[in-house]
Image (tube, rainbow, N blue to C red; front, side, top):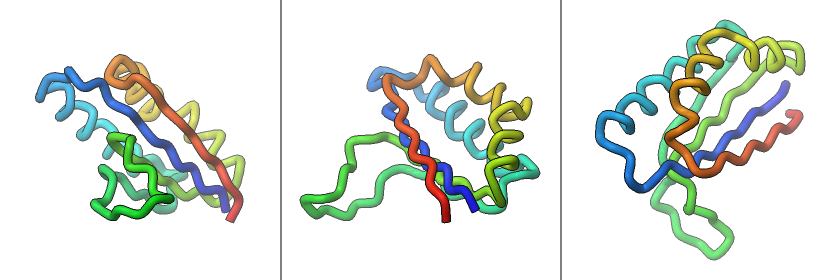
Length: 99
């Protein structure tokens, strides 16, 4: 199993339409056939010194293996999301781990 965790820092001055587009398009990533499970959303309101809540939105996707992850990266739905929404964020951090 491969866990793909992506954290987005969205621009502060995004319009409501741009935020809606981002939210709608990121949801489509869960529909890609190689995604076994997907969890998407803003930071929880938990608050402890070790928690980083500075990001705007998180995406955690589960893949069967590296090959599934690699197919996802070039899938047209993923490419459309990146091409359409890349201008919406100032920073992205990705953590891939084996499970």
